[in-house]
Length: 218
Figure (tube, helix red, strand yellow):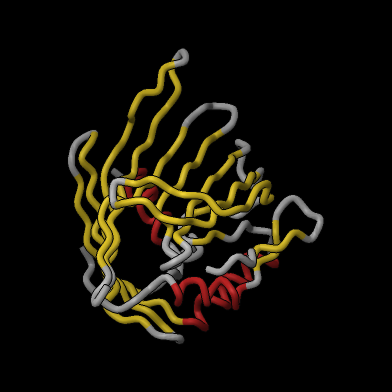
């Protein structure tokens, strides 16, 4: 279960960081803030990344994603893990947000975890800057930000509906296996509605898709 737990944490982590918020329960725009500076990765504009986090969270908002891992076996895609992540925003503001994350694994076996976390602007920006200066690729929600190869506007078709989205494709060589990423982020709410992560040499993939979405007073 540990591997799947890490998969789901990566979706909702602001920066894939060990200090990414406190647990108190136990168990948008078109400008890309990840600018290329001529190295294999990109230096993060951490202030703009924080503003993206603020824009994509409204108090009472609920987003739920399907998460599916697949491996390539002799040209056939086989599901190795699947489950869901639900995020409910409890508090949202310009300086901090608080949200409850419910993670469920449905295959193989069953796993459930519910946590509430608080993330402050100072904490986010400090960790973002530290990671960026050390050459660690910074993530936007779950997406590792490597060398951006494509960015444009596209429609994203999901179980929760169709969304006009900002599409970003990138490639990272930070790990032992080069990885490509695709992300569709709704222009109206700033949330990720679809994501694909592919390990180039092994064919292993991970997909995220928005399956439920509610916004108070919308």
